[in-house]
Every structure is written in structure tokens, then in C-alpha cells.
Length: 143
Image (cartoon, rainbow, N blue to C red):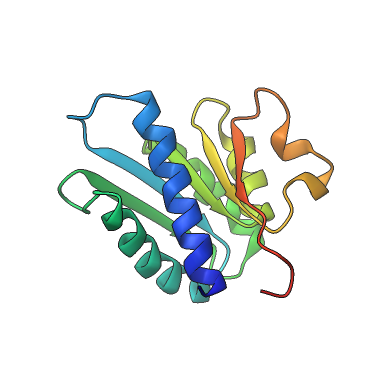
């Protein structure tokens, strides 16, 4: 399995598990995605849709997505994270540590799924009790 496929599947499964545990089945779910670059956005979105569809979630039927990309400009992340929080998603998926930190600064109420190589290696700040962040996994380096 390709690394991006694995990350999308893992992030999608973690997000689905997070909001499935929180709410009623009849309510449409909303996932906010915070990305650093456009190159990540399209491939991540495609693989995420495929992964969530395997879990029974279909966009426009029982799930909706809000994507925000900083287009490589890390300084935009705090503003984009605030935009996502204002949309009140059930969960925010943050692809890589800078996105996770921006999401964490924007909310303590919405769960954050961190898709990153090493969220603990950031000094543990992402995974403090009450931070709202949880790791989706740590793929092996070089994959």
C-alpha cells in the first residue's frame, strides 16, 4: 500500500471513528481538513473519499468535507484553522504537525486527528491531556 493511501485510510478511519462515537447515526457528519500544500490536497482528498466510502460514508449523503489549504504558506494556517472551527465540523484532520498546531490553537472543543510522522516528537505538546488531539499513526520513515 502506498504511503499516501495508508495515511488517507488511517486519517479517514480515525476521523470516522471519532465522530461515530460522538453522535447519532441520522446526522450528517462534517470533517474539516487542514493542509499545508496543494500537492497534498488533491491526492489526499481522492484517497480519503475512497477510504471513507469503504466505511459506508458517501459525500453529500451522510458526510461533508471542508478542505482548507495554506498553499505552502505556513503563515496562513492560523486563519484557515479558525475558518474551519467556525464551520463547526465534528472533527478536524490535520495533515502534518504545523497544521495540527494551528488547529490546536484554534479550538479545544473539536477533536483533532493528527496525521503526522511524529506528533510525540514535537515535545508532546500536541498530545497533552485536554488538547483535543490524537495521533492517526506514525508511518515508518522513508515510506
